[in-house]
Length: 117
Image 1 (cartoon, rainbow, N blue to C red):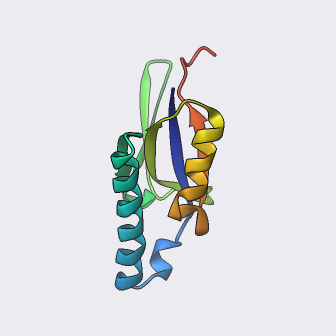
Image 2 (image 1 turned 135 degrees about the vertical axis):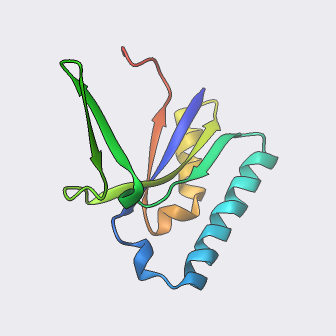
């Protein structure tokens, strides 16, 4: 089974770090990804740019609307993700506990599944 570990960061948290602190945090995440890869658990991983460079798209009644970030109502943003292969939910939760981001953000664990479930 595949599980997504979504890194939910408080909006603006990155701006509170110095460049060196940010690079140190990123390095820890890279090492975590490398460890998952060595264990043959990693399917995909990406860090995401801050939400102010993002956009939201909706199509209603055939009309598309695009809302450029930042998104005023957001208190958290998805800072990145790990797509991992696990045999059980418990294994995925254990990986989330190992993730360095759990120390400064929330790691949401979601099993992949068809959207009709």
